Image 1 (cartoon, rainbow, N blue to C red):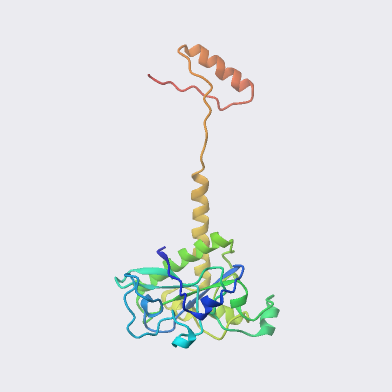
Image 2: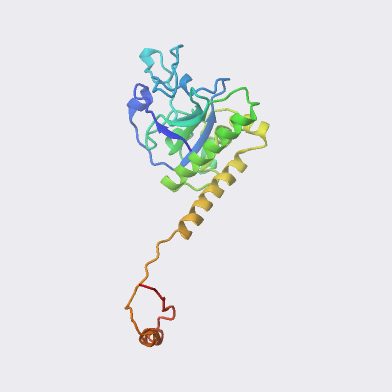
Length: 252
């Protein structure tokens, strides 16, 4: 994961500063054939490159900015490598999914009809022409690693409805009618089920690695020049309930 923080402080959503308790993760894609992060994130930090069209998202409404903001974008830097740029604090409400149908939302156990106000972090992946397998594999890897990181940070379960895309959000009644990201993922043999499965595998592998790396502490009770004295102490320890007591020979 190549995660960088670049908050869009001029965006009205950032300025609103409304807080939420993070409970979920919603994946989006931008719907435009432009994989470059600089299209949305500005000014240039030396890695992004410049957006000469003046249509980035780091602007207020009075400056011609959009009334939207997600928590981060995944896409290309100017050198062609893939990165994630965090554009809102994770615990600030984003404006990333619109509203869905309240009756459907309530039927699915939600009190509101917008994931914006239900604790969902929204991430946008910068689309290309949707047929570049190399780029897709890079953004897929980056997005699963980011999601696993946020699942660890906020104790998000790697399952539906806690990890969803925009399309699934609409089906649940908590997002507007969009097709992302399935319309893109399906072209490369992936879907949100495989995404959640891969996030879970990442989390499981990290848990396994952490358990294997546990620190152990050894206790040394003495050293002897006569081996029989060492054996006598070992016998005493075993009889006292310490069966793992052992003798280690050292040349000094």
